[in-house]
Image 1 (cartoon, rainbow, N blue to C red):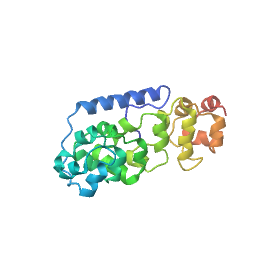
Image 2 (image 1 turned 135 degrees about the vertical axis):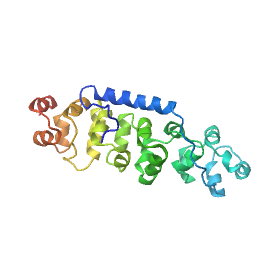
Image 3 (image 1 turned 60 degrees about the horizontal axis):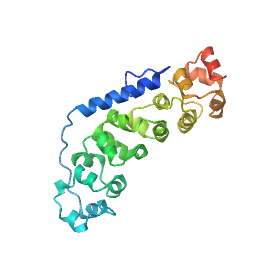
Image 4 (image 1 turned 45 degrees about the vertical axis):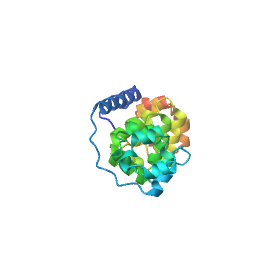
Length: 232
């Protein structure tokens, strides 16, 4: 399933994908996000875990009203993803504490690799929705490599074709995306031949990945002309 109905796989598809994501981001930033219900109070253990090497005194965090441990406090005191994960504060709980958008969530130093954890990704989707997450965390070919073959693909509603569109002009990273996506030699179904061409993947590397001209043709509906362009 594609993340955006306006994405067209083929020549220029990568540009349309990026334009679509930029449009989504603009629309999301302009919308008023509903206020999440209050989060359960943080335990003393969680509070202390948040301030390790931050300069915030233990007495300060212990005595603070729970409601004041919000996005502004986290941001201004250098509390970032490693500490938040160590304190076992979920994305849903973060949203209730004022981290209202995926963009704000990203400013706390969460990365695409964090979405590979199935339970964490599920909480991210519950908090922000797949489209908003993709607008922030599926931008570069490196992001595509991070997500390839993981449970996050299904949780975020993306397929191999979408990841390869992000990899246009990056054949080495496109190779890694295909290599990480099972089943080997049979994961190109639904990928347009134009998308393969846009990535820079060619016959030599496709053969290394377990593909032949016949299997590429069968899975992508590549024509004789397409196969010729791919170097078969």
